[in-house]
Length: 187
Image (cartoon, rainbow, N blue to C red; front, side, top):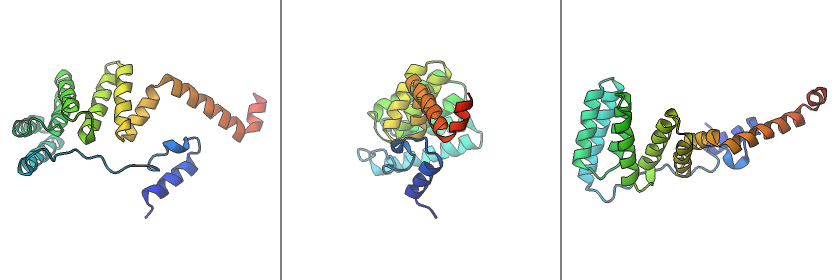
């Protein structure tokens, strides 16, 4: 089985137009984690169990039950960001976009913009902002999430960056001309 580094090298070979520093997996850092050390370990375990129950309920389509589990998790540890992320997703699925954004902002604030919860909240808020036509704010959230390690956010930030899009188009044209000189001479 190929390692992450091997897959990244193959990606670079099969997608040579990707800048070397942007090859996914080549310089990946350790998986992002939240710092739960400030909380009572028993309460963290209880909250994680409630969140798992909430996720399970949401996956089975029982969104009201999921919301109830996330509300319980928040009531047990209101200073822990993860349950706010999960509740935001549930609220979004229930059509409460405003409530979802409020929860995401709370998660970002509680996490101090660091860790897995911050990264997920920034990506989710970026998506909601993008869907509502606030591309510049979405790009900023995606850039922050990308800095925390989200490859998806990095891709979204590039898509929303007009200068990057222009540069990518110009680079693609140059590479195409270099690969197929006879085609460019005919044009």
